[in-house]
Length: 140
Image (cartoon, rainbow, N blue to C red; front, side, top):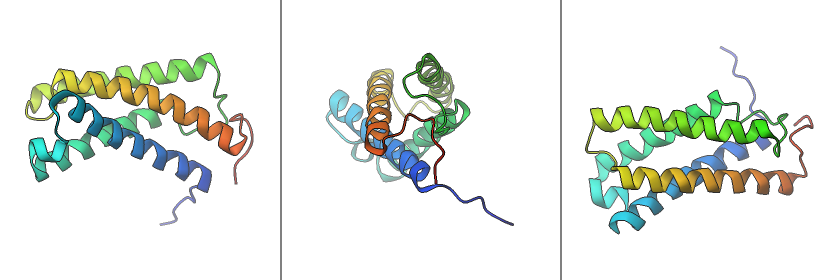
């Protein structure tokens, strides 16, 4: 089986997203209940919750083509992708929260959704500025 090589710039973009999602989730817990997910839910449930939410966001970002570096960053389509992705995350999360009520409450979810939406947008702008990309050039 041959694996497709992931360009370094794209990998850096994904790792930034992972960092922002985990940071935002932890901040949401701290803002709302003054504890981290692991200290509030316990090690197993905290890790499972964090990893599940991380997976939901990354899959949604992939579906909405967030990792297409040829897409113009400052376009209406980019804004539509962010809104669509956050809406998809919301729908999936609502279903999961009803199935597994121990995970995350509405307040934490809403705070994390706002933080992630804001920080991901800032991260994309910073990434674009840092690498001098208009998201139009080919990457190596």
